[in-house]
Length: 43
Image (tube, rainbow, N blue to C red):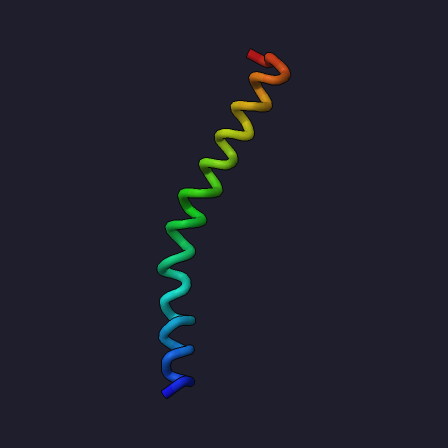
């Protein structure tokens, strides 16, 4: 029973992490890029 439960958790992890990473990393990249541009006044 425990082995099956751990397998279902491992199988569900990608479905949780993929949208999380897909939303969080672009947000961090955009914010850091915006702050970098503001700080150095490239534009």
